[in-house]
Each structure stands twice: as structure tokens, then as C-alpha cells.
Image (tube, rainbow, N blue to C red; front, side):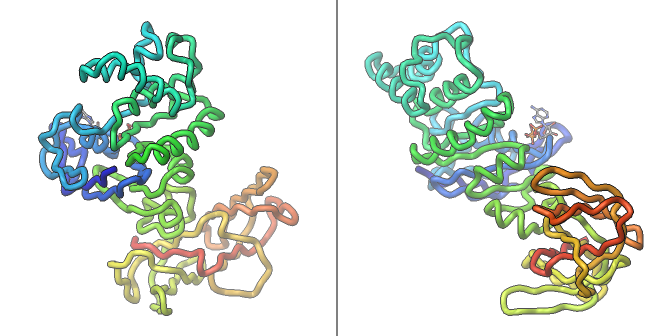
Length: 360
Ligand code: ATP
């Protein structure tokens, strides 16, 4: 098992800078996610780690070994693709054995390792079937077995579940996590599916335009986003423009009081290197599920207004709310006592601990 370090990686395609000085440390044995919207550079970063792209600048280390000049097949990193990339005319066993034959592993050992790989993905006994006799989920397992059979230290997965239907996707999430953990692998997983990342990742990096915006556990990223882009990319959030009125400190972190045309807010500052002062323009970020409708008299983190639309979703109700000054908010009430109707005048509130104040 190796950790993976990326230092100041740059990759350009003509005018396009796909990776812009990326620094990253993935711990040994970790299942790490690269997440970001289309074209942000996730696949380019993964392919650079695999040795399928040559970076223009920067270094890649597996443990203490620099990998830049090491060819793909000697990196002990196996890649699984979105398309599975299986050969349809070959049997399952032949597909899995292919990489070993290329490495001139003796026949007896090949058979043992193929059987072992099939067992690891819970497909023992499927070696003689052809690929077209398998379901999508089984094909994905074969693709995983083919990656595992070369005994990699690192498993690189590029949107491995996006060709599966939603039920299979859910099943394979825990299956892939199990395979990475049981085989002691360092896993790097590319997706633009935030739910997949939140539910599977030990840690993740949010990327945008070839840069890494934030690295953290799913909970850190969701609860303490550092930028408005991260806050709105992971989950949904309400962003309210305002400016800092005063700085409030407590023992653990700085919080600030914000004045906006919708009212007064107070929340945490999540970015350690950002020092707002009075008058600094900010965005207040509050998740829809952190807002609630209440008749309390609090003035802080409160907006008065009217319900414009309400949607009943069983365990929750979603509201479109318009504040008296025109501010539009999304509010999700879980297990509500009763459902408010369009036209109802209400106040929506949030607890200070659920309010994050971000740089504008
Ligand atoms: P997606 O989620 O759509 O797969 P991504 O985040 O994986 O996107 P990349 O595939 O890494 O993004 O692409 C990053 C940028 O580099 C894009 O603007 C893309 O057009 C460009 N790019 C990637 N590969 C090539 C290539 N072989 N030739 C030219 N441009 C490329």
C-alpha cells in the first residue's frame, strides 16, 4: 500500500490548461474522490496518475518513488473505465487473464489468479461465460477483477458506475468500497455524482477549472465549504449577499455578523486564511434543510416573507419562499407538522451553527 503525492502538476492541451498546479496527498489505503463539473480536469488528473498522460510540469509520487518516468504497466496502478472496456468476444476468464499474459505470467499461475480475482468480486464460477451473457453489474465486476488480477497497489476508477441503472449503482457503491478496503488498496475515484462521493469517500477533492478548491471528508465539505462554488456544488444552498457588520469570536472559530437587505445574519467563517473586516462583502450560505418556519421573535438569521410554492415529498416538504425585500430562498422541512400553502406569510429561520459566511 502506498500513499500518492501530486506536486504542482500542470497539463495543457494546446491553449487549454486542464490541470493548473494541482497539489494533492492521498493517504495509503484511502478511498479518495475527485469531484467536479464536466471539464474541470478530473479525468486528466486520474490519467496522469495512471501514466496515460504526461504532465507538462510537476511530480507524481507513489510512496517515495517518483513516477513521472515510470511506464503505465510498471506503476502498480490499475484503472477501471466507465465503458468497462471488456472484449465482448472473449470469455470472462480470458478478459481477466489478458493483462497477465502480456506480463508473461506462467499458465498455472494465471488460472489461480483469475479464480482468485473472480472470488474477490463474488463471481466465482463465471470464468467460462462470455461477456454478453452477463448483466451490466456483472460486467462491472469483471472489469474490477481484471484490474485486481495484476495485484495493483492503487485502483483508479473513472466514473465506473455511470453505465449502470440506479439500483445496481447503489449496490455497487458498497461493493467497490469493500473491494478497495479488503484488498488494502489506495483508491482514487472520479465522478460528478455528488451523492456517490458523499456516501463512499473517505475524503474528497472538489475541482474547478484545473484547480483543487477544497479537500476534506464528506462531512467537512458539506458542513464547512470554503467557497460559494463548493457550497453550491455539493448539495443545494441558499446564498444571500450582504456585508460584514461586526466580528464575533468564540473559543473555537471566528464568526461574523452580517447585514443584508433581507435582515441580520450570524455565522461561521470556514476559511482559515480569510480575515473579513467591517464592510467586507460576503455571501451567507444556508442549506435549505437548515432553514425552518417558526413564529419565534428572533431577529438574527430570520427572513420574513411569503410562501410562493410548496411541494409535498412524503418525508419532507419543499418551499419556494420570497422575502419581503424580494430575496428568494429554498426551504426544506423534514417531517413537518403541517404544510404551509402558497400565499402564507411566515418567517424562516436558521440556527447560527448552520450558517456559513463566505467571501464574495
Ligand atoms: P468530464 O466529467 O466531462 O469527464 P473531466 O473533469 O474529467 O470532465 P477532463 O476530461 O480532465 O475533464 O478535461 C479537462 C479539460 O481538458 C477539458 O477542457 C477538456 O476539453 C480538455 N482535454 C482533455 N483531454 C484532452 C485531449 N486529449 N485533447 C484536448 N483537450 C483535452
